[in-house]
Image (tube, rainbow, N blue to C red):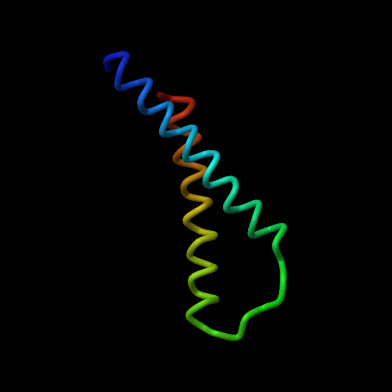
Length: 65
């Protein structure tokens, strides 16, 4: 793999780690009142899963390049 592609993957990996980590931290620290709307709760759960996936995949590409 060439150097330019490796740097691009590491940059996007770092962005994924930061963004996914901030999504998880905001959800864990936010707590707040529970909303009884089912669609809103499903969206919150999906965002939590998406943040965890972004954190893991971003970490992989940050390390692996």
